[in-house]
Length: 298
Image (cartoon, rainbow, N blue to C red; front, side, top):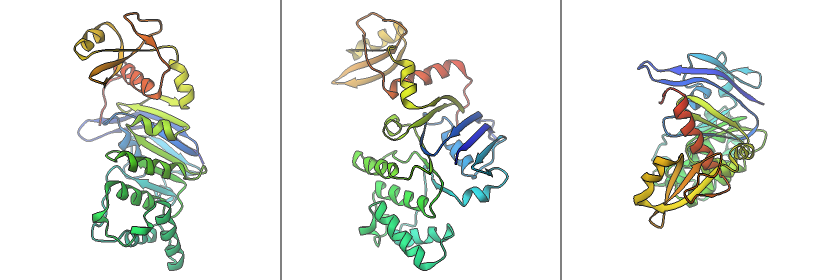
């Protein structure tokens, strides 16, 4: 059931190099693909989903050569893109029935049962006859995942699914993803570190079209353990500390700046050592990658 991506590269006609030798091995379960906006995540997701072809490289899912036989992959694929359109004047029930038909569920009785089950799963059954133009953003996202799950896919791709959702809808959506079976390869592409920390047993960080880190979050955290330091300073002094230290992140708290620094040893200056979290790894790796590779953003 493994998805194997090897040496995938893509340069657009305008000269933008979106992917550069991307190689990933993704086993069944939840896999988080982290990266900033413009890192190449959506290009990679569209390529895996057979919506565009790369310049070089290969993709295999189970025994399917995806680039040679894209239709075979589509038969077992569920895909929720970052942006997707729905018919605003149609009820959710009818929209989902339509997509189930497109997924090959042609028997009316079977399709009716599937639609009802999926709407129950995404907690939209009670509003199934309401037109989706009146749905909230979170409700539309949940309908999108129901569409992606129609036909029982073995590979599910969700691209930035929680962007723009309020905290309640975000939690509902993440709980929904967590309930998907362990025998399905689920790729969660996002720039929100918390989404990956809460859901994924494996992850990778992509930046400027290249994979800069891959592994289990627990192992990745061990790489920086003992090397993350924190100090809270007045906002007016933050730039002075940035000039003296390798600051990997800064956030506001009660009007002050909370600085996190990466250092092999005590950096002094009043910093205290703290246990790292995934966000520290993320910002540290992005900073290191920025110094090491040529920009190839999308």
